[in-house]
Length: 289
Ligand SMILES: [Zn+2]
Image 1 (cartoon, rainbow, N blue to C red):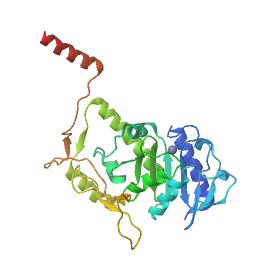
Image 2 (image 1 turned 90 degrees about the vertical axis):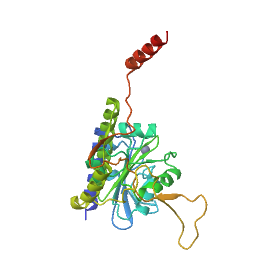
Image 3 (image 1 turned 45 degrees about the horizontal axis):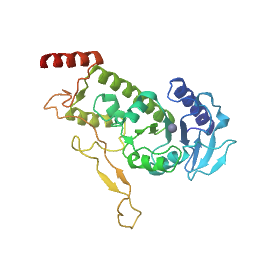
Image 4 (image 1 turned 180 degrees about the vertical axis):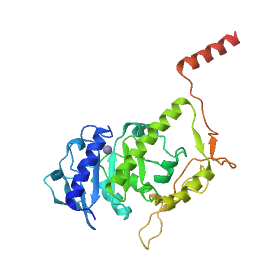
């Protein structure tokens, strides 16, 4: 079990790395860790994560009441509290605005295609939580839908959120998401993404166990199907119309391979440069004359 002083130092170091890598600008982002069974250690609001010192951190209870610290806790505290409520296994939460992953979140494109084995074994798929106004109750509500089945997600038009069994585990997932987003962007700019086949994805799921990586939820059974939804109800009550459903499996876009481990994306599109497109249009016009 890490001591409080070492966890304070770890938060400072993770904040410094996030800022140095451009995952946050100005005072963006926030970090928290569990401090024993009923307390959290959290970054304060309105500080640059690149220049924190260990004494700046706040200690709160799991309801968000400040127990210790000169500063007020993060403006996204509600989102952190919701994650700890939904995931007893989670020890740390990291939120940042890494630019490439956030670009996907702005474009509404989830990082859920089976492209890289390392991403599939560590995170599985990375969905997009619906847009919610930052720092309001709507944001934890949006996150709640996906958090039981995912260790990382994009936040629509906002950023990304990762969780882990310890602070560095949560931080490294943020690195993985941004790295994956950069690779996906390059592949899409080049005009093609070859995908891992469904069979290969299932093989990787089995390997997860031997790597000692616990998946928060299984891969959804069929490609392209909607995730299984379970209507959330209080104990002993009947489901009510409009209740927020939880996602309980991970949607991964992976086509059937018929024995192949890598398959050409059946829905792949070739993106043309402006010059190539103009030349095609000119040719078409010429042929009409
Ligand atoms: Zn944010």
